[in-house]
Length: 168
Image (cartoon, rainbow, N blue to C red; front, top):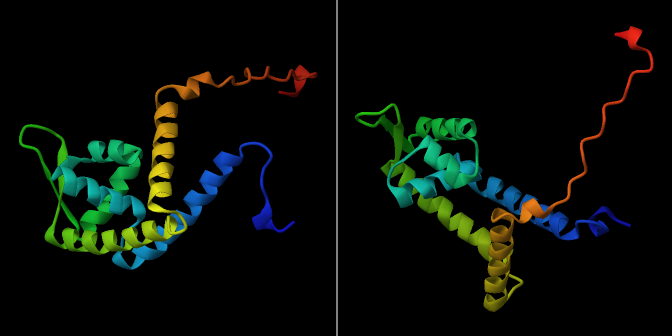
C-alpha cells in the first residue's frame, strides 16, 4: 500500500479533516509568503478591517490563538507597516488598526485566498459546497456546545511503584 492510500481504521473523519487542513495550510503559506504574511496574520488583518480597531486580546480570541502568540503576530504586522498600534486614553490596552499599506496587502492576499477556496471546492457543485460548509458548522457547533463532554476518557493511570525505594 502506498502512503497516500493509507486510511486509518479509527478516526477516519478526523484524519481526513487533518489531512485537508494540512494541504490548505500549505497552499495558504505558499500563496501569502511573498506578501510577508502568514495565514494567521492575514486573519488578523481581516478581523481588524471588520472591527476597525482591536486589542491583541480581542484578536487572539477571534483567531483562536493565545495572547502570547498574538503578540508576535501583531509585532510582525506592525514591523511591516501593515498596522499601527496606540494605547487607549484611560487604559493600558493597546489597540491596533490597519494602515493604507495593510489594506492594499490585505486586498491582494484576499484575492489569493479566494483562489485557494475556489480550488478547494472545485470538484463540488455549489449545492455540495453549501452542504459541506453547513455540515462542518454543525459539527463545530456540536463540539463547542459540549459534545466534548460526552467523551469517556480513561482514568489517570496509577503511578508505578518502585520496587526498590532505596534507588532515589
